[in-house]
Image (cartoon, rainbow, N blue to C red; front, top):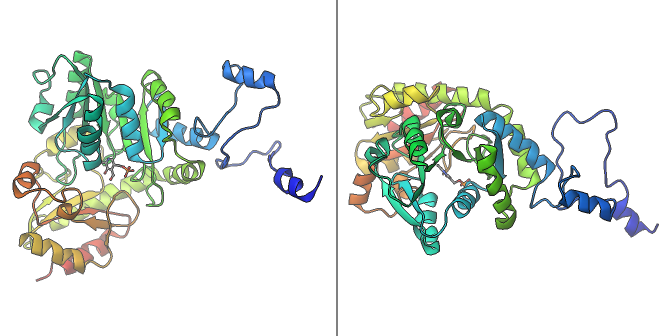
Length: 388
Ligand code: PLP
């Protein structure tokens, strides 16, 4: 054959013989090769074990989905190109015109806007409910309520919702319960065992843990995941093989990482509680947190996010933010690096004073995602940033 043909076809399919690779190979291919028309027919009839097209399924992605299902204690899991792709696929698949979704008013901004701005255009009714309403859902359900969507812990106050209570109320009423478990992860908060129907996570955060992948995950029973898998083929939000490989590698150290995030965050929170430069420290692992009892009952560790409320409001928070040296100024959370953000410039940007009060958010708040550095270095960094 001529050079161009050879370059394209020679050595394209790799066979490792009787010695398979130890780690998950990256199947960086958009499509898969069939031997014959008979095989294509068998595949379409579900009688041939194989793949057709990477927008549908890809072996690297499937391998990592099995890891997510294992960590989440779920029958099945799906990976997406972002947390938002997971959220939009779930909402568009599971709701139809005339259905009502009850969503926690304290929710990630992207989730709020997709429900309020986009789902509304498809005729889905929505009500945003308070934490008090989430604690007693039976009187809140309406005839058309099909889904409850909530988070725990909630950004940036780390308020917590009783997950078992929400799951039980939903089950009794025949309503689907969905939790965004991004902040806790299943290692700290195994929501499948608490009766939740569908767990969503931004894999960008603790699942991957290295701030180098954008991804999303949905996990649940096979019967819940099957229609979402079908819809993902059409909506096209599947994760690519390369980030899936990176995610799978990151997940192997997840138990070690999460344990250290928990320990470092607790050390930082305990050290700064009562600090003269602070109004308050928010961390569900502190006895002073309003939802400590709920957190203790449902979390084996309290996560890596700590929020401090600096005295002197916005000016104080801005000063601390600019002075930090080890803790980097960056949005997101869940990576090995400690980072911090100002809620009034990120998650609560543009809210009026009244809306901030309703959300329990103050202008002096600095939200920190505590990483895996030595806790003493993080404490020293914050101490110098808080000094008069
Ligand atoms: N849910 C929560 C709680 C988040 O914090 C985020 C992102 O910050 C998302 C969902 C969206 O995830 P992604 O940015 O991966 O699309």
